[in-house]
Image (cartoon, rainbow, N blue to C red; front, top):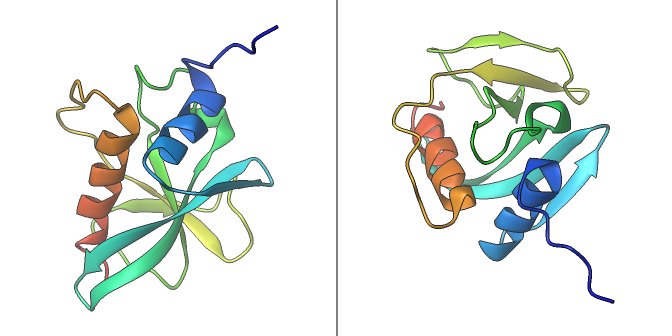
Length: 120
C-alpha cells in the first residue's frame, strides 16, 4: 500500500519546503524553518515560521503572517503575538503577485527573503 502525498494544507507546505532542502519542525502549531536571507545587517540565517492554522488552503492561498523572533526588526508591518511562540511576533504583509511557480514553496521562500531584506 502506498501513502498519499498531500497536495494542500500544512503537510503540503512542509513537503514543499523539504523539496527545497529546507528542514522544518512543528512547535506549538507553528511550522518553523530557517532561511538564508540578505538583511540590512548583511547575510544571515533567519528562523521563521507560519502557523499551521493559516495553511489550510496552501498553496492556493499563501499565509498572511510571517512569524519571526522578536530580535528581527521590521518597520513596515503590522505585528501581534497571536499564535506565536514565546519570544516571537508575527508580521502582517501583503503578498503581491502570488505566482504560478512550479514549486509553491520556492515562491514562499522568495517572498520571506524579500520581506527580510528590510530587517535591521
